[in-house]
Image (cartoon, rainbow, N blue to C red; front, side):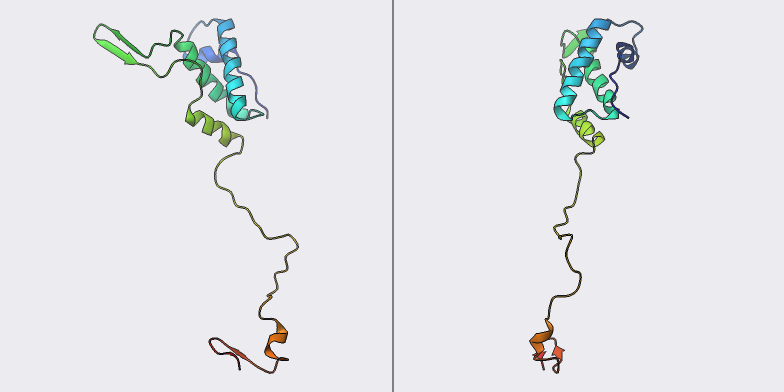
Length: 137
């Protein structure tokens, strides 16, 4: 499957809003897609979760307030604006199949698995036996 762009209705559902400003939501979604594409191109199938998360943060906090107190209640909000967290970048890379551990096999495809040491002609024609620590005796 390929990445499908989330709609404004998806952002409203993600944020739990009954109504949403469609033009603003579409702009934030497109900008979030651009941010994600700067990390991974093409965007993987599950990238809509990261797009909605980033756009949702920016939509829910348009004034960029980081701390708010009303009467006895106070709330601290995350960083304002449209951005990707470190975890979101890592998730995008993982969904695209990047990151994590890997191995590189330096053995050429034409390598012969037969032993190369000791060569047969070292023991002087084959009439000697090799004893560890003593050599050919």
